[in-house]
Amino acid sequence: MARIDATLLDRADALLRELPVTRVVRLPHPGIRLHAKMESENRTGSSKDRAAIWILREAVRRGEITRDTTVVESSSGNFALSLASFLDALGVPFVPVLDPNVNAATERTLRRLCARVEKVTEPDGTGGYLLSRLARVARLRAELPDVYWPDQYANPDGARGHYELTAGELLADLGRIDYLFVGVGTGATINGLSRRLGVARPDAKVVAVDVDGSAIFGAPPARRLIPGIGSSIRPPLVDTARIGEVLVLSEVDEVAGCRALLREHGIYAGGSTGCVYAAITQYFAGRTGPEPVVAFLCADGGEPYADTVYADGWVAEHLTPVVTKGANA
Image (cartoon, rainbow, N blue to C red; front, side, top):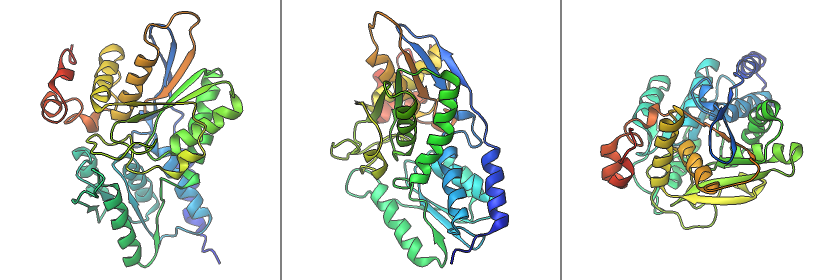
């Protein structure tokens, strides 16, 4: 029989109610009516808050999480931050499993919030660390007596959070959407957004944005350096998303998109957002005729990427010096 912790459920419901309704802002852009939903305004600074609190609330409601439970999850950064913040408020211990690509600022915050942090250091043979992180999660689940694993790549509750919250707010604000561009990592965001859009605006086109080195859409996995977009596996949540088109960009494009978004609109965004902005710019280059309504998420802020995406030295060493030219103009 499920051990439902009524006090914990009340706390989780309160955290869910306290989520902000993030702004949708209009960005001048040639040929289109472009809108960004500022998910960087969430409690921990990213869209992952929506999936995290929905997953946790549902797990508490089903009795899968009590105050005796330890939550364990593999994350490249933002989802771990969301879980850490909410679980700290709930009084439930959390063990994040990280890898060397985690942003330094994110790791510092997690080590302050969590009594135990696991960090894998060995690549998994795909050029990344995801499989190594998942293997460490499996060991922790065997080691600890009462464990809950959110499994963000396959958990429909995470997608439901975006369906109800992120997509609901976006549609309430805009009404009409002709194109929705979504960066893909775990698949939860594009699953929830695309399915809700399919109900409300079935004529709208959902464009998935991925990055070179990601295996989500059939390419072999390869080394990637910027967390937040792409994956070494195809997440099950992608299979039930409503995707009209896929665009795959390079990490150079990703960096250039971040810097262009800052230069042109004053938005200091994270890597996945820059990749999506670059995809939108390329997709609509030279467009004429009626202006479609185009939307995307500003999924997180740029602060955690200050030493990578926005640092000329890091980009020159790890990607190419060409992208730094004019980036700070």
